[in-house]
Amino acid sequence: MTATVVTAVAPILIFLWPAPAKGQKKGPILVSLDTPLDQLQDGTATKILAPTSPNSAFIMADGGGDNTPGDLAFGAFVVKTGSNVAVFAQNCSHLGCSISFVPASDTHPETSFDCPCHGSRFHLDGSVLHGPAAYPLSHLTWKQGDSPNQIQVDGIVLGF
Ligand code: FES
Image 1: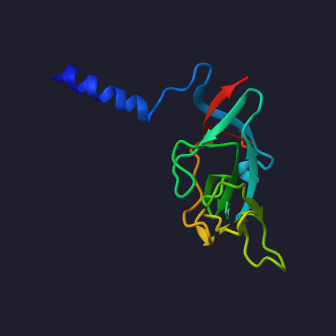
Image 2: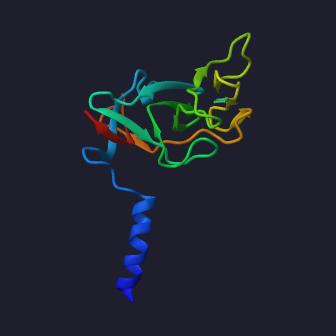
Image 3: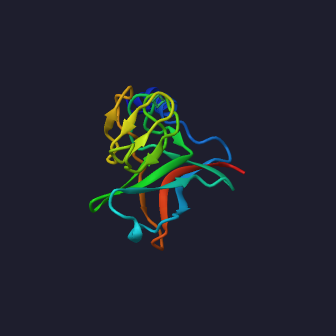
């Protein structure tokens, strides 16, 4: 009975969660921050890029719209709101264009993440401020590195 279940279920699990291709390795990606975590001001964000040597990508922890958990992101924003720090993939949940962090100004009343493709905007907590996007930004799983200007983000080394 157990052998029959394993034989039937294992191929489905391998299809749903395939192993990384040969030479690829999932794990924490160490990233240096332009602004150390302890100096990140409330309501601001700093951009990070996945390392290119070796070629790496971050892995989305959740998703909605064009983003799915497990999708790759090559850039992200570390954002501080109050005492909370979150890391969001740069991929717009509408159709995947790269968002930008836009501070409030005379012509831009609210600080937000803005998408240049179709005008979607997102609050700093990742929720939708303005469509056409209908889903929030995707979180990345992260933790503090050994120093305040380093974080480790769940990702994958794609190759050299
Ligand atoms: S891809 Fe961002 S608004 Fe369409």
